[in-house]
Structure formats: C-alpha cells, structure tokens
Length: 421
Image (tube, rainbow, N blue to C red):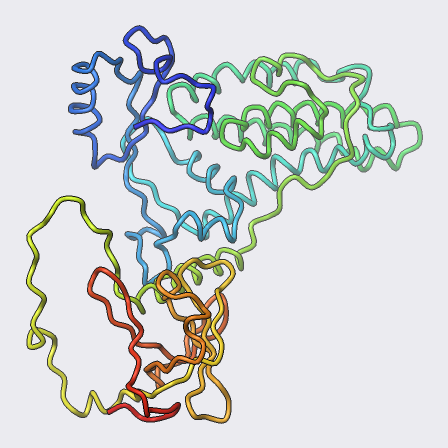
C-alpha cells in the first residue's frame, strides 16, 4: 500500500502504532468508504496506526464537461508531459483546491491565461525586471542596506498565514495570498520605475536599492510557492545562490549578497502546445481503437462468457458493405514510432504508384522485422487521419480474442493490390 523511491525510509517509522510521523491520504470522493471506514479498521486490527488526516477531492472536468476521448480532453499524464511543463498544472490545480469536497474544472483557455498572468507576468517578471540591473550595473551584488524594511518585513510576516493555509490544505487560499503579495511587489516596482531612474545621472544608488528590494520580495514569493512549484524553487535557489530555501530561511533579508546571472525561469504557455496536447490525446484514442483490447489473464478462473453471435451485430445492407474497399497490401517497411509505445509505422504497397504510410497500434504484438514482406489486409478508402506522428492513410485489419492480436493475412497466391470481396 505504500511505495517510495527512498530506501532509507523505514515502514515501521511511519506505520507502527506509536509512530509520530504524519501520514495523509489524498483520495477521490468516490472511494471515501474504503479509506474512511474499512482501511482504518484493517489497520487497527493489524495493530498499525491510522492516517493523520484524510483529504477528499472532487471530480475533475475539462472545459466544463466530463472528460471525453473524442474531444481530446481525456488527457493522460504522459501525453501532458510531452507538451507542457508539469509546474503549470500543479499551480492551476492548487489555485482551485480547498479542504472542501468540490469538483474542479480544467478550463484550458483559463489555464493558459492564469499561468501566463500569475506565474510569468507577476512572479517571474519581478526577477526579470530587477536582476538585469543587478547583473549589469552592480557586479551581481545586492545593495548593502534594505531600503524598504517595513515592506520586506510584511512579506516575511505573511509566511505564517500562508503556511497555515498549506497545513490546512487550503491551497487556493495560500495561492490567493501569494498572488496578492505579487501584486504588491509589482506595484512597488512600477512606482519606483528603476528603468527610468537608470537613465538619470546620480540615481545609481536608488536603482540599486529598488532592485535589491525587488529581488528580496521575489525570493519570498518563490519560497511560498515552493510546495507547489518545486522545480521553479530549485531554479530560484540556484539563481540567488542560497544554501537553504525553506520557510524558516525567509526571515533573513539579503543584503550585500551576490547572485548569479539571471536566466529565464519559466516560459509562457503556448496555446499551440495546448492544442497539440489535445490533438495528441485524440491520436492516442484513434490508434488504440485499431486493435482489440487485450486483457491480462486473471489468476482466478472466471466463468467464460459466451462469445457474441454474428447475428447480434448491427445489420447493414450490401450497399453499405460495398463502400468499404478492402485490399491486399505488402509490408515494405515497418518501424517503431518514437514517442509511442503502441504504434508501428508501416509502409505498404497497395498496387498503387506510391506506397502508403499507415500507423497501426500493434507494437505490443509484433516486432517490425517480423512484418517486413508480409501480406496484410487493409481498408484502402478510409479517410486519411492526421496524427501527431504524421498522416495515416488507411487501416490494417487485425483480429483478437482477448488473449492476443493477429494481423489478418491472405492465403498464398494473393498479391499486393488485390481487392478483397
């Protein structure tokens, strides 16, 4: 029930009866009975401790609707990671989650706007606006004094209520307070206008002071966001050249402190990347639909269900069947598809002037070298389908019985281009 990549951790330290460790369960609202009733009873019976707390989340919708494979909104984590930074999604979810059992909606347009506005436009922008002056004009070193001690102290003091919100799993409340501080920091910089001061003779010290305050305020924001954005926090820690980046370290104001050269910390979300993720989710569904799903064998014997009779399928007329152009095709080349564990890319001779390119979801069952030279049956008049990996111009037929999948191959004597009827 517990899994970790930390071999130094002890199971008993967390689960023995007198353990003083904190163990929290985050679950969906559809499995409350098991985690709130049965699982604690099992732990008590086995003389183990029960969890410190149980936090229940609602369901997730996308664009206000139930996740849909046909709309491309049934998004797998793997597909998301191929297109977008996981920090974006962590922040968006954190901005919506509370200790209440409420459903959340991932509105993709709002997702783009919120991440770009909050994280890039408000938070990271503070460092971008201030660091360039510190790097280029002041030898990478912050001012010897803090020009706005009360302002910086107000940011430090806010850490207590933010920490309490995190502890209570009021993530959205924590995020709101952090963004209010970000607005306050940007307001300070807008009022002081260091870019304008830098053009005025004799204002070098004020530019130094303003930008140093800005860097200190940015540091506080990055620390407060670190539970949600650990990667960004690590980047900021390296940029500021700090040994510690926990909540306690925020109380030390940075003066006469050397920082590294500023590097972009986070890119804006590209709406095209979001659209590509949605398209890729559709492609994944389309590829999976080509091959009958194979279920793993169950250890226990189950009553074998009768196969559906042919007559139980939907009846179509001969005119409908005649619309399907089935052809014999020869596999000229077969190759795996980078970025997909399901697809093989097939180059097929269908008796036409140019070979066809077809993606088929049979990688789990065939090695590419086993297919080269093989005759298969394909649907030749299927509309071309644009996939993330290219255009698929047809569909190779395969049969499955729940135990495996076999590509349909004609008897010897058939040749590429022959019509199947």
